[in-house]
Image 1 (cartoon, rainbow, N blue to C red):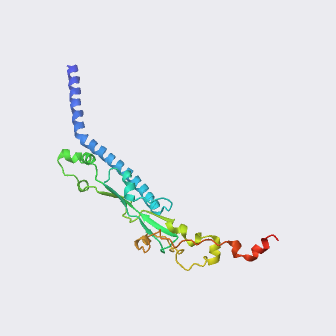
Image 2 (cartoon, one colour):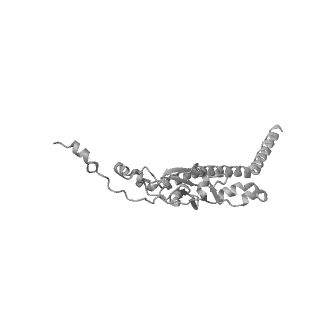
Image 3 (cartoon, rainbow, N blue to C red):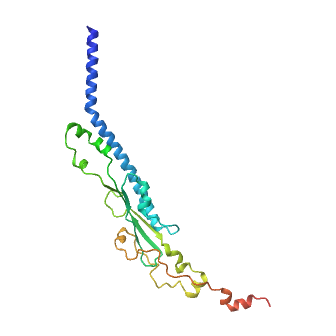
Length: 232
């Protein structure tokens, strides 16, 4: 009598546990899908920040060939259909010595279908309609949570700055009095602000000012010094 009651109790208990598991299984699946989704989005956010740094540095790199952002960023976001950056540069003068560069990376991708189905599992199992934010497809993601136009900015020398007059030989600087600048190539804004990138007049940092003339031979230029230093 006692043995049969105990066996019945455990049989009923096993059935109850199985039924409880069936009821909460959709919730478990939804939690797994949400965890995977948050993890993937976190990795994308890290890659987006890295892409912002890379895009502005690459746009201002004057020592190597500049690679298009769409080509270089493709490998960082394998799940994305398109990865793009809106890099913009600003010079205060067409022969400016410094440039102000800003950029923000945007990726276009859909939420994986298996994660989407896992997250909707409780609603699918009960026949209810998922909330609106689940029904709207996820298409884009940027490095800005607040809708900023640019999320990374940098100040760098221009590509043509190496041929500027300030780099000429010292004999030419003294002869042509290049310290008396009349142009605006050395003028900079009073304050470096992101809003400067909204109104760009000069955006080409590779326009060279001119070829450097041949340097002056000091010994030919200063005759008295030659006479004084020569042996008699």
